[in-house]
Amino acid sequence: MRNDEPIDELDVFSALMARRPVRATYALIGLYIVLFGLCELWGGSERIATLVAMGAEVPVLIKQGEWWRLLAATALHGGLIHILLNSYVLYSFGPFLEKLLGWQRFLVLYILSGLAGTLLGTAVGELVGIQVSIGASGSLFGLLGAAAVLAFRDLGLPQELVASLRKAALVNLGLNVMASLRPNVDWVAHLGGGLMGAALLLLVIRPKLSDEARTPLERSFTVLASLCVVALLLSPIVAMLHGKPWLPIEPETSTL
Image (cartoon, rainbow, N blue to C red; front, side, top):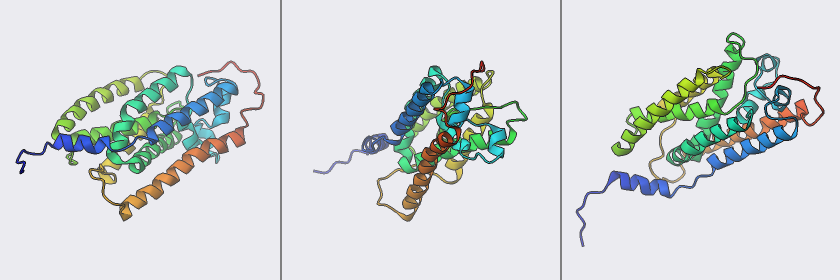
């Protein structure tokens, strides 16, 4: 029997997304929780000395050769509210973008956006008064920047989805930009991450709109994503071996 009913583009897209698992997003949240727990165990996640020993972004130290801080800082959080908010944002946006882009492109986007944020912070941090910075906000702004590109550029997504994504992108960008203007917030990392996320979607990364066989491009993204993950995992390990946060730290009054 012949079926002449038109195929609903959104239904096809939804079925494609439903078949794809979400692993990278939850693994990142797990990494943040583990490092947060270690910070609490070794002096407190709001204690500057502990965070510096764990790999916080300190522009002066990075310029002296402590390169591991560029990524280690993106996995650290200061205080319960900080990690809960960032984990919630990642949980809200991550699964959709991971399914849409594929885990390889998603991780490349996420980790490189965080790196861009700390690189920009290192370059201009001292000029704008940033001495110590931590958090995944640069990576999260990379997701928001990517979502904005998806919402306002024709990349083959169903129009119904684009309309919803456009509203969500505008609301979340507005809220997060306003949050970036609060005191003691590293707006430089937010800016760097957002610009990197948008640039990657504009120039390099495209949505994965079919479950095609592994292509040379797909294999290249797998290799690049693997390198990014190794770097992200090694950076806090190197930081801890260097900073030895488990050793007693002299009493201090400074906290985040």
